[in-house]
Each structure stands twice: as C-alpha cells, then as structure tokens.
Length: 303
Image (cartoon, rainbow, N blue to C red; front, side, top):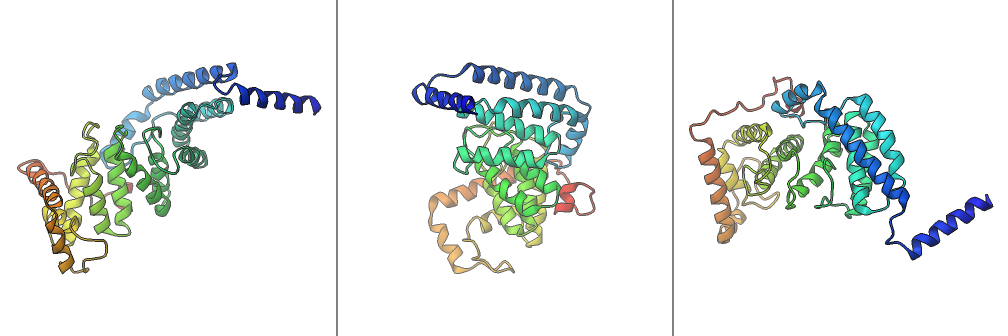
C-alpha cells in the first residue's frame, strides 16, 4: 500500500510539472483507439446490416451504425480500457464518440448515456464544433425507439443546436425529421417551427451536407401538418414564423401582435425567401406521400 501511494504521488507530481508532456502510455492508448476505429470501419462496411439500415433510412428512421453487435461489444471493452490512459481533451472526445457509436450498435443505452453526458461536460452542456458524431443524436434515436419521448426530445434539441455549427453534422436530415416527429407528439405547430428553423430545405443551414431521404419525407410531413391547420405549407411558414410563442389561437386566427412583426424588413425578406424555396421545390415534381398512421414504420407510430 505504501509503495502504491508513493507511485501515485510521483505520477501526480510528474503531471504537475510536466503537463505538456504526453506519457508513453497515453501515446500507445491513442494508437489502440485508432486501431479500434479501423476495425470498426472494416466490419461496418462488410456487414449484412447495411441494406437493412438503408431501407430503414428510406422510411424515415434515424440510420444506426451497421457494426455487428458482437464486434461492437468486443471493441467497447478495448476502447473502455484505453480510455483510462487518455487525458488530452480532443482525444477524449474522439474516444467518447467511439463509445457512443459502439453502444448504438450493441444496443447499450447506458454506455451511450455515459459517453454523451461526459462529452457534454467538456462543452458546457452544448453541442459544439468539437463534439464528435453521433453525440447526442444517436442517444436521442435510442430513446425514441424505446418510447421515451421526453428524453428523446431533450437530446434531439441538443443535436439541432449542433446543426448551427459550421462543421457539417452527419445525418442532418434524419436528425431534423425525427426531432420534428417527436415534437409533434406534444405540439405540431412547434414541430413545424422546428422544421422551418433547422431543416436545410427551408434555410441555409448545413447546405453542404448530404441530402438524405428524410428531407423529402419531412417536407411532405410538414405539408400534412399544415393541412391540419387548414393552410398551405407556404402560408404556414409566413404565419408561424411571425408569431411569438403562444400568441395565436388554436383556430388559427391571427392576432394584432403578429402583424407588428412585419415591420422588420429582414424578417419579412427571410420569410419571402423560404416561401420561394418551397414554391420552386414543389412545382411539378414527384411528391412523396406524407407519412400516415397506417404505415408500419416506427416514425409513423411515433406520430
């Protein structure tokens, strides 16, 4: 016990006076982490689950990583072991991102929650440019599939804020679609506002990200939601983008306060731009059918 105490004291003293020096143990652990990532990519790309996830994504699901669960469990053990020796914040974030995606493949929500929460500590509870994918959207999707919509919405909202960063997020369209579907369980008007604010279809956010099938599904879903308010999608953009929260009656009657917002020329120009985008995108094209409750997709059930 005395010997161990002396070793710990010596190590603590060494880090105190040479914090800029990376220990050999940490260097080797970083290589182990890189090796685990290579193995993950090899098994992921050769997995038979790829076709299944592509089919799920085309139906609106958030696409999961296609690594076989047994491989994910094995790599999780290796990653957890090396993570104890990694102290650099950037390397720690990469490690946490790896643990999150491995937890997604092995269906280990506790591992995902622990990695997401620890990553959020580094960024003061926000999703920033240093937050690795798929934190926190993968955890949100896990809670959504488990029926825990409150937790799902909490983490989806964090993921949506990450879309605002200049770093392209993976699966942007799936994040926005599923966040809106969960939000719609509580308030469809807020779901429409969420789509207008964060979807690359309606604004200039993440314009360089890959266009996924979820984008078209979201547009058609927004048309269906707008129809429930008795208005078109273009009118929904103008109406809901110009109201303060809780400032419109349930029957859709516009209040005097809504009209005052039109005095802002920039706001009016933004709304006009969104209307133009929608009009041109929907002209003459093959529209996808909006998601209906009779469908068998999980997202349709969530609606």
